[in-house]
Image (cartoon, rainbow over all chains, first blue to last red):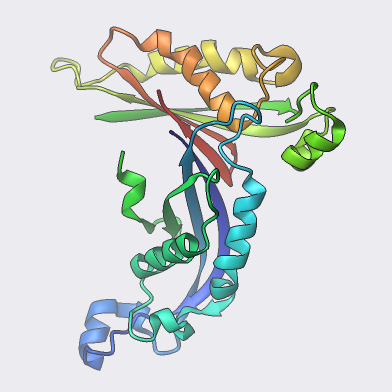
Length: 140
Length: 135
């Protein structure tokens, strides 16, 4: 299986705050990420697909189709948003672990039928230094 | 364990099949189908797998990997029009998938029988698109 990974960017804000914890425990757990006004990142979303290389086109998939899927199924919910406003984060903390799982779920719910290749996983760079991956990327 | 060495080359290509009509090429490959070509700053990351030698502590000398990459990939690919100057791309569409596979096949013979086994070829066409290929 050959894997193709395509990278997208979006900017969003979030505040890490667990409603079941006290104010003090939240400050202790999340530190400056608990700032009540929130803060933001230029996130990078990498979407990895896997499949055979088509012998006619030399491609695993048409990247324009993936772009369209990401632009319709994911980006309208995340780009220039406060992530805490999303219904998916009404009870969950918008950590980038949870965001990566959400992005993967959004993609798989709108995924194109075969022969479009399978979704292997997603990787989100919250910053250049903080990188989060769903388990599919590490499976063989 | 795995070690990875990176190298860069710049080249032009056209995602275009001469046996197809202009319309079909446009439909399948979009703007990349312009037969006059366009270019990228490609990067290739070659990952090798193996156990470190107990004496040297190395799986393979990275200088050796650098030399192999320069000989097998950079020398033939850098500043070339892939479709016209680099076999097999006269007949194989130089999509990043096919380029990654070709690089694997160029490199594989250099990594047989030693401590280091070729594990993955990652080809970046741009910062925003890369392909992982392994056989």
